[in-house]
Amino acid sequence: MSVVFLYSRASSLGAAPMPINDKESWHETFLSKVGIHVPETRRRGFAAECRRQSLSLRDDPLEREALEWLDKVADRDDWK
Image (tube, rainbow, N blue to C red):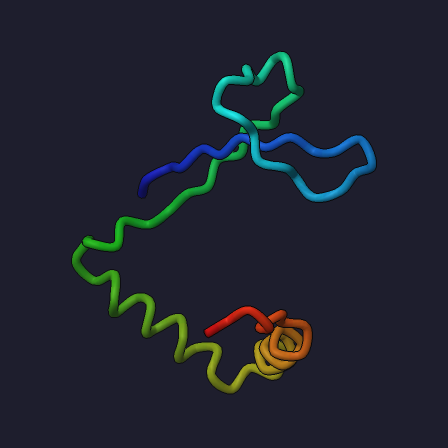
């Protein structure tokens, strides 16, 4: 498993994090370091595990509800 580190700065109004200019240092801009664990996609069995997890959610009513909500709120106006 790999770890990807992202740096973000929240606005003073509590809005979503904003991208940082590489020239700014984290201690000068109150950055938060966020680590995201990313599975190794080239690992043997990765595709099979993705399929297993997907199939386990196929008939899940909460998954259906979440997907319907995402479809409802998705902004696709600029998609081609």
